[in-house]
Length: 439
Ligand code: GUN
Ligand code: ZN
Image (cartoon, rainbow, N blue to C red; front, side, top):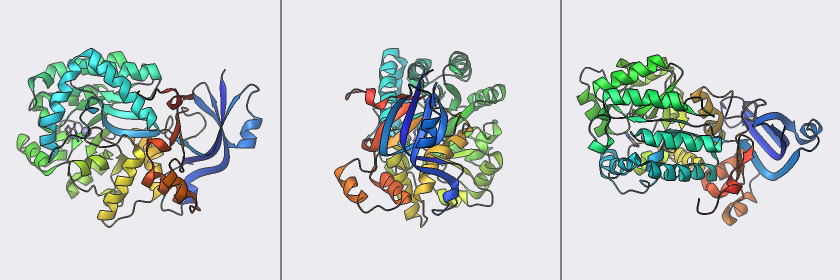
């Protein structure tokens, strides 16, 4: 048995914070110890008490004065869009047609998919992200590369072969039948292998025919434990076109509902422009709205009403994500900075406890995986991120006047990026320090 004892300042949430003064919502241990054994967290507490119960020969790593937090979770990314980031377009549909679809065509090539997968996981680790929920391309080769590399690194990843059978270039289309068959093949090959989870992934209503939506619904019925991921209500032209393609549906959300795709394991990217009826339907179903702030700003899609959705009589479950490559940063710290600014523009406040809860336990709860990831609780997987709020000269200077944990968290989210991530542990193993500079 290999044991490692991490020493540092521990922060882990028990539940969603009610406000900035809600110290009961989290554990903060200023001189903490975290014992890692066989890829799990074996003990957490004050350093002295955890040290006392550590086996002899336990390796010790001193991360003081840094913060030890659960590995960050990114709830919506596109693995084949690493070379789409920073593409100049006026809106979502132009961006998809001009840059994104042509780029995704390249993932039919297995060697290309494998190379990008290596870079993808390097970037996650560099940014302190230990779990990602991702779309692959339509090609099974891309899903194979995505899951094989996750298995190599023993990361808990969720992903799916995209299903899309219309309104895209020929090289990016499956059919209702092949989309179904290949998704089943990906599930058979990868779901439950290592820490991999497969998600049923119809891209969105515009690129799936009714026959394909039906096939996706059949998969959801056959595999009720799997997550479903798709896009919803991101852009006004997208909404109008979707409703035109499905004239019998009450609205965009109802398109997915009609095919059995609206449920507690459905992760809907964006959800910026939901009507009250749609928000009620999401809430009733327990579906998750995944907020992608850097993407929403970059593509000019709109301002996500995060606070308004969470304080409704029927609240909508929320998660946060980068949406690489519509999103412009791999960093969840940068992501929460932009989320904060969006709420500012809407006249709302998003406090730093909210942000750190969302990036960790909140996202894990949205996946129903909080018993495995998203906290530092005993018995959970040892996916851990070490953060330094004085990572740059400007941050060090600001830290001179920081006097509380919440101020430090706010500084991390406002000025932090991959430079603030000192180390990233995956299943108990330090991974960031092993990366080469070029990835
Ligand atoms: N809607 C359908 N596909 C995509 C995508 O790749 N990115 C974003 N941001 N929205 C989408
Ligand atoms: Zn997306």
